[in-house]
Image (tube, rainbow, N blue to C red; front, top):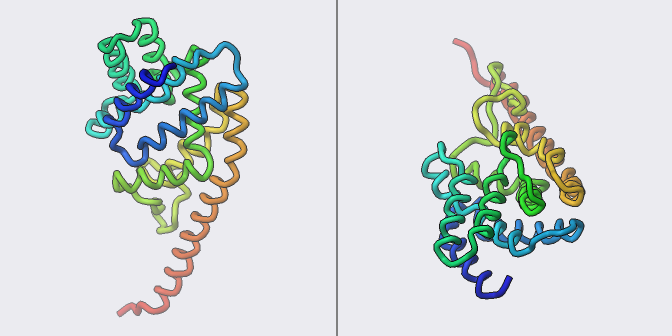
Amino acid sequence: MNQKDYSFMENYMLSCMEDSAHDKEHIYRVLYNALEIAEAQKDVDFDVLIGACLLHDIGRKEQFEDPSQCHAQVGAEKAYRFLSDNGFEKDYAEKIRHCIQTHRFRKNNPPQSIEAKILFDADKLDVAGALGIARTLIYKGIVTEPLYSLLPDGSVSNGENDTSPSFFQEYKYKLENIYSKFYTQKGKELALNRQHSALAFYEDLFNEVSLSYKKGKSELEKLIKND
């Protein structure tokens, strides 16, 4: 890819990014992750891979404004139109569209090309480990969702069976399970290297808030007198 095409796509990406949990630095990390993963793969079209990485989240604004919208689908169509309208070959635009369409967790629409699989893994790698925890907490703050929910007995839920959104629920529903969902061996290896830090943070946070509720409620009950 030449510098002119890279800058053209990069500038379009920058004009679309507004979500601080999915900002331009997320895009660059995904791109750099993808290039590292691609080193262990064969027959990678780097022009397709780089373009797909740069444009993979350009549909985030539409999903944020209307949660019924899928940012992967919206972004794929935006990327296809943008590339087609600006002189890129239809075949190239179509390959980019496929990569973006399939980069989100969807059982019925898995990535097929090696570039799509690398993008998927590179994007999921940015949800692994301490970085994934940090990004999730930022996003939960943006949408004003809590760290945790309480069980009927007033104790802190670990998130495992929660239906209401929270950080603990997101960890149990998504973050805890991403390590088995990679398509490339290199992507999986990189993710597993980060797993311990995410688990340690979740366990420490759960233990801290649980202990606070247990001890605090017990002490409060001693001080509150029944008339």
